[in-house]
Image 1 (cartoon, one colour):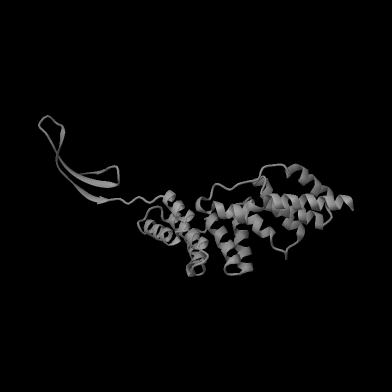
Image 2 (spheres, one colour):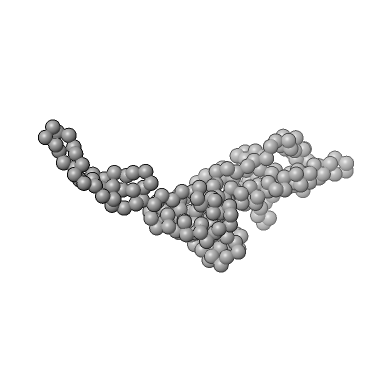
Length: 246
């Protein structure tokens, strides 16, 4: 008995026999089942049009079918997170990333999103910080963990500045990190360093995230402030001009 997988995902079972001349001949064949193939392109199309309920169904079906379960469980967490007008957004986002981390503590991506969602959904700032620090213990240069830790106003300014330097070492130029580090340097009267970074980065094209699939748009809008690029560059220029005039 042989099994053949045809285009379209059909599994064909074939019974064969050996002919007198030694060749294999088909005795009969029948369709056993059809493999349903789920793809991230379909998911992206649903998310782009705001069809979150259908996107959730797709993720759950792919996950239940055992097709790359970790990937599809992660996508499900993303969709719940993006569907911020639904009750599921608040109920399921954090638990999904908690489950992913419990299954694989080395999953840096899941741990980052767990830390991030603990902050903005659960408002558990200490747990969020601990998860983000765990991310850095596994990936010391993770730009988004550094970026979120740098936003903590209750830590030393020098530590916040170092976090932002780490972001800019990986993402030239993350406009959020660029404007934030200039602002902190000016507030701590490190004028020459602020001017140096301005001259180094002011005309460098903005960094655009492309590696996070359906989360790219969110990350560029929120973590990189793409839509505020010209506003933030102008603010940096104005602040430096005021320092020079004074």
